[in-house]
Length: 80
Image (tube, rainbow, N blue to C red; front, side, top):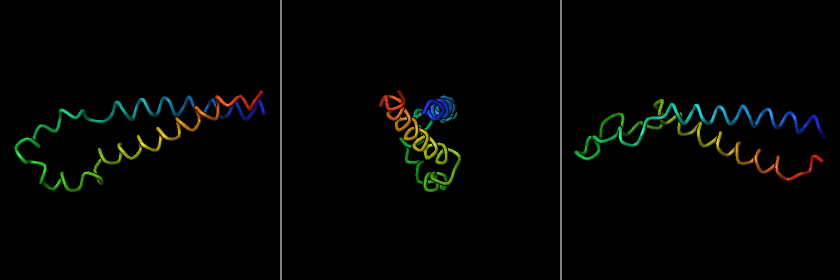
């Protein structure tokens, strides 16, 4: 059981670093000020899910869920 806890802790640390990096790579919400004038109806506005920004949002969701699951599992104290 001690080996499993060590492996899960290493995965958790890697997940934490990945989550921080993915969040820092994303653009801020203030970068989209063109939506005030209606510029969101462009090609990039419709295909945002296929862009790099959309990919980062999806990756953030996956890594955040993994972070929460690992945090809960590591705090259950089943590894004592």
